[in-house]
Length: 338
Image (cartoon, rainbow, N blue to C red; front, side, top):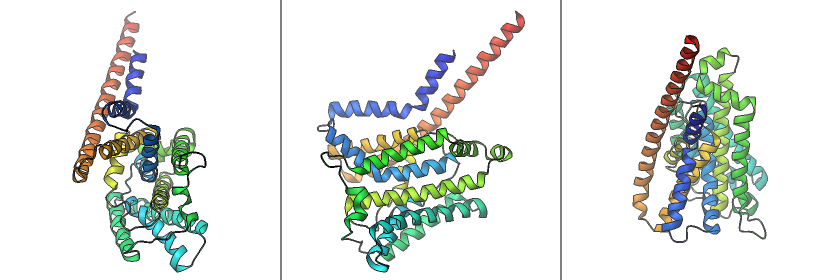
């Protein structure tokens, strides 16, 4: 009984990877030019920038919070960093990189303080921040910024000599590995999960839940700005439309990966699976030459399916737990009668 239950739980926890495997097999059979090393590297490379928003959102969702502002921070951070470098103070590209990430972290800190300490609803707070920052970016760089120094583009454009592998792929995968270690192996990560599962119980256990939630927002903002920096490296410019409308895909990737909207449930590996699933679908649609006007409709459908899958997963978890409790009760009754 235990082995069977553990297998079911494992399958539920890793359901997105099963879906991804099925998708890859089907695409390899029916989509021309899909099954190649070059195309897989292309999928990973085009996931790098977007992945930072997914990772940041995962931290927020694990503590039961939302950060809608990341799609604007994605553009705002690099815009401020580039302006410091090109027009305002002419700082070096290295300093501009740090400014970019610190700006994202600062926006996250403001969001965290407003949502946690002031008590503003996180959804509404970050929605307002999203709108404000997008307006500021449109004002600051209406035409975009070009002729960016190569040192500022390094993380997004540099390709390892002798290979076709961009360094951005290593940055992306390394950060997911580090995040997985932090969540599963450190007191910070375990307290983060506990805070999202039951904030009151975590507080009674001596966990500083407010600080943890603020840190989740800080991490989310910093990662969003880093994602924007990676995208700038890929494009060679900073535009005011970066990340516009991406927040729905971010939610879809996280929820498909099993990260609960209620907090306290999910994993970094699951979020990675959801991200790669969406990136693979986007790649398949591109290779198929699908009408771009249908892409938005398909993305909305995927988000709907993600919510349905999450709901079904929760119900199956509940069913397994009830069966397990019933089995334990039956065993106890047998022992008592014996």
